Image (cartoon, rainbow, N blue to C red; front, side, top):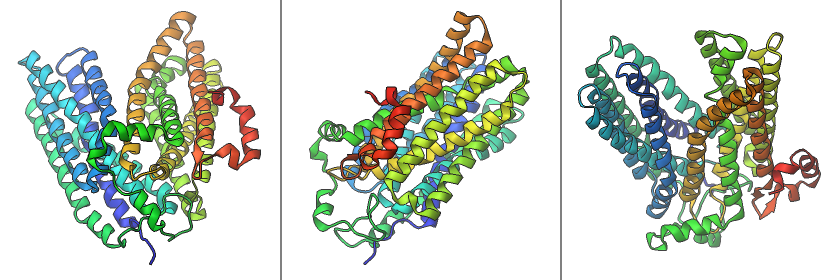
Length: 476
């Protein structure tokens, strides 16, 4: 009998959950952020601290993943997380409306609301990625990663456009109504998307069978002994013991470091690209916003490119091939950032739009390849702990995102203060971000492939070439 993973339609259904998650998150981190600062005249530090709290609480992702591992089924944890997230999203709108008349009560409620948002995103997002890692056939993982990522972006776009329409003219009552409608719609969509999905997947697998997690031939089932070894851990095993066991795995530990460094580099550019375009190239706010749109378009192009190539050529079935895409994406991102560094010093003649699109494409290639590798590596190890591993890497990503934007802007301010020249300051900052991507590529090379071998051991000639390029980054 051949083990069948999730069909394309079922992968699309899980993508709808990501769409719902993105819809709530963008309303709280973007629209409510603006309302607090503009309509409520609150200091920008308040929403900044609240969004930081939302990221900080995602350090609990490993625990949520471990709980879903112990229970065996992921759907209840996804729905529970969405319920907490949806409730937190509406409470954030209520807290914002309270700021106008009861400032202390509004701030207190906002802290509770953004805490719930962080907890909800962690619980639902981690369990969803664990379900994908466990249930998607290896050759479909690059495309599956693209589907769920793009559908989350679709959630951002649809919610921003729709909510923006219904919020005008603004009033606190409209904010509560729009937020409540988005939260209710997101919760309903998630429940419908998950209904009966895990039950149907289980029915397609005989007892003791599992999908291959790495580059085994298509349709090959894991041996009964290995399936037993990967049986779900019990709650009695203890979270800290399970986390210590996962951290002791060389692949999990090195991949965690890779995720942190690469996502730090990925996010550090976000908050300085538009100020850079304005300060160095003299772009208006509208023009710089269009420039950011070009970057996001490039990201989508890179994602779709890797998904199509990985699916058509079957390279998505090989962790080694996905790792090469990851290293290539990191290296290309570093080159694109160096081109922005050069652009800062040659603003009069440099094709800025081309550099920004190149950065987006490189980031998209890196992101999908990294997620595809993550989905495969999540099933490697001594026990069935996809949720815990996904939680560990998700926590590293969230912390890096929270730090990246802050450190990027701080580095920009510090460089301008030291150099007293915005063009040189931005050149140095982009160069430092490029070094982070080079270090990320070095870490990706050092993550062991299935079978316990590093990539440089399995592909010595390629490793020798990369070793010269990334010697400093991989020396640790």
